[in-house]
Image 1: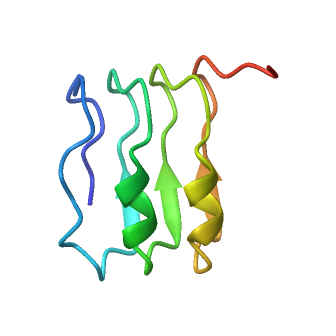
Image 2: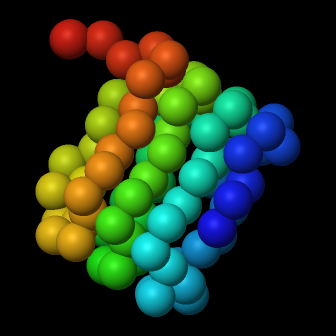
Length: 79
């Protein structure tokens, strides 16, 4: 699912897309990754680059099929 470059201020409701394998939400205005992302168990690739994300939620570890996570060019910090 390609949603890049739409200046989305919030993450779209995607819970029902349980077979989704690739999600590209790059180049938007997303500030966070919602917990429901872990319900997308078939995800193999996620692109969150060029957003406003400040932290990675622990729920991402539940995505056991995930092979690629692109998170560069956000507002992540070590703290």
